[in-house]
Length: 91
Image (tube, rainbow, N blue to C red; front, side, top):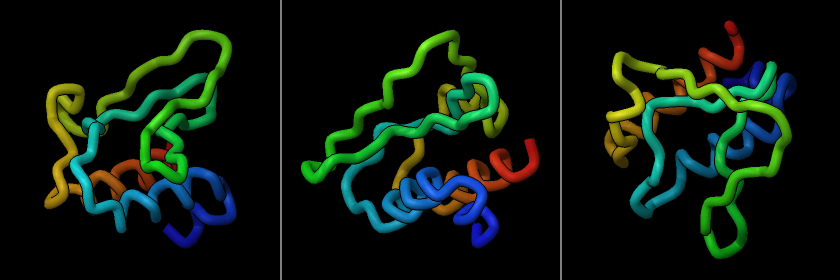
């Protein structure tokens, strides 16, 4: 994940936030991709997730088999962070 900090600082900060987030996560094992950028929810002071506005089409990529139907629970958060980091660094 250290390499991710220099490649994509915003994604890195978002993943660090998720690592320490204690409430229920509204994520599944997918990433949304528009061209090359990886789109994760941004968090405000109120911890309400919102997605950045972008133009064009967005494609959803499963990080695990049937990832769209697998919720990211607290106990699987580190696995999700690892999969997102690996995807961003290798794809």
